[in-house]
Image 1 (cartoon, helix red, strand yellow):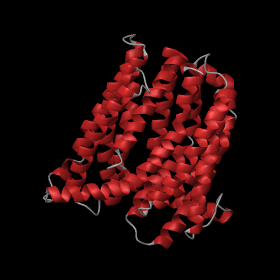
Image 2 (cartoon, rainbow, N blue to C red):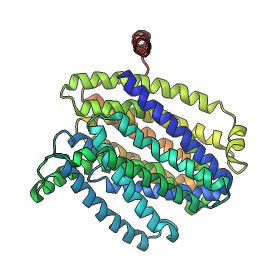
Image 3 (cartoon, one colour):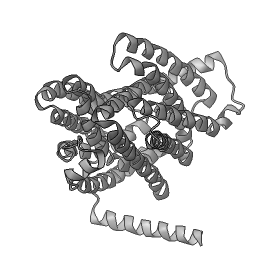
Image 4 (cartoon, rainbow, N blue to C red):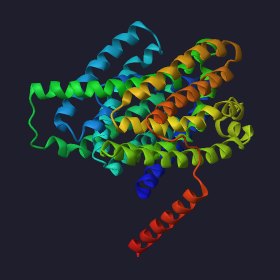
Length: 428
């Protein structure tokens, strides 16, 4: 357990560093307005990908050990094509983004969906190393491509970011095909009826799970579109950098919940999964709390030096976001308890409440408080979403926990020393 969680954390830590470096490059070379454009494009890609994953995505993790994987592939691929076509038509009719980005956004979301399908198969088989490799490639290759384009002055516009995404997602897709190639070589029987049956199962679980993700992502990012409307691209760029920096705290709980989700999906002992979730929640909240303190004591001058003079007030924005960001660690870990048991609707309900709060608060606060209004709306949304998940977990027989006790810490320290000693012996 310890090695897998540490491995997940290591990958997410490197990914967070790469994403930070990407934000620095984009901010410095194309400014706050360009950073705002980049954030809108990335948000739209993520939103379409979530609809792609209505059939596929996380539901594949749950069904990978229950349904023939070839059928999962085919049903998910066909759905991705359908959603991509519909998304293109919708974006032509309703201009959520600049017209020049519409085709690129649709294609990128489709590629992202295919990578997600393959990643979910690997996670469902508990092949975390391969899963982490795919997670690592996208930010790594995006950063490398951007650095080359900016350093040699080949392209210093927002379009450079879109080009780098094509390189990163395209390369990751090819790698993912290689990693799941054995699944296509299996002797599993394929028929129209079996594909339709697989599609129904994927839609049943995927709709519940992705509905939660749709609500969650919209509650996270809908403020970008409110900000763009009332304040312009530059405000979006500044706010998105503050969000990117402080959301890096979540990589701790995300690393924990990734292992937790795969473990629960392959377990039938509910008592064990509750106790495990409680323990993981304690450590997730503690480490996130310590990480937040470190981030919040960094002076604003450091961020203006890092991103550029336009990017001021990041420290103050993070102070407003901090309470919700910390409490949301409950939603990340407890939510994966319900996902692992196939009860995706719990997360959908919680995220739905969070989205309603975001829309109402953003509509009211952003015109008045501008960028701080977006931060207030987001923090309120995180708090409400987490509260709903906590209530459901408590009703399910779980305990409300905050931090580990001294005894818990001592036991964990002993386990960690034992783990490190074994690793040292193995290396010798």
